[in-house]
Amino acid sequence: MEFIEPAIVPKKKLYTGVEMPCIGMGTFGSDRVSAEEVSGAVAGAIRCGYRLFDCAACYGNEKQIGEVFQAAFDEGVVERKDLFIMSKVWNDMHRDVEKACRKSIEDLKCDYLDMYFIHWPFPNYHAPKCDVDSRNPDSKPFTVEEFMDTYRQCEELVEKGLIKHIGISNMTIPKMDAVLDLMKIKPAAAEIEMHPAFQQREIQEYLEARDILPVGYMPIGSPRRPERDIMDEDIADLEMPEVVAIAKAHNVHPAIVALKWAHQNGQVPIPFSVHNYVANLKCMIDDPLTEEEMASMATLERGNRLVKGHVFLWEGAKDWHDLWDEEGVIVK
Image (cartoon, rainbow, N blue to C red):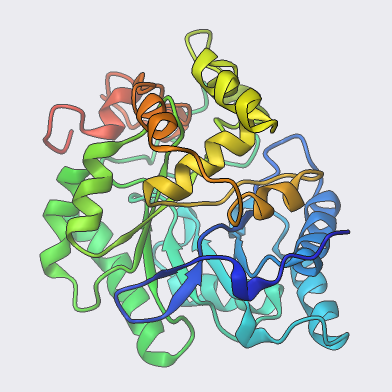
């Protein structure tokens, strides 16, 4: 397996001055990849030069990934301080964030987390692998009070040394407007869905103006996302003619074009792959897209949101659009 020297992988600086790699390894195997396959890919990724790993309690594989981290530490492949490990509190633990965090740290065998995200900005719980029509009668729309209660618990985790940075995820501009001024500790990053056909320029500019790093999930359009998230109207980013043409010009897979675009566009992509993770990392250090190719990629915005969030809807919500505050106000 080819080794890419971590020192030559570009870094992104957080507002705290801490640097993190410009690409990470996602660990969401959706419903198609077992925990063992995911942790096996993580083991290979560490050994090929990855240093940023994006985990989450609800992915159901942190224990297996922790065994991989521990083996890498024990074998001297890498030290804990060389890894940037991220996890997320799931919706059913918004009232007990410290317990959730300690469990992730214990499962991941990592002593502390470099970044801890609030996975969704509301406690609307659904069971893993439920279908798209599932609804929890206890689901409620976003409230500032509920969110800030959860966020305050994250701030306490920073003060206790359990986590280094707080992250937010799946937020909208109206929701961020409502809470950012209330925080004692500013979030260091925001995880949002970002790929060529869903570029989220407005939210990226909003984050960058506030020195919050955009971390892009589903950076290649997630062709292997869960069945429940696949809709007839979805666009396959990697089949768009412009992406295919640029890939041919560089003699690479279209996925590589999407990742190069993400990096050059200013976000940190966190792709998951069982087989292609070496190429995903290597493409950060060679053969960038040209200005003309980046201009071509900028034309591909189609508003193509793939993670719609149906399962988080509350009683009285119209449809999944209500989760995303598309009219510029928080939908109640």
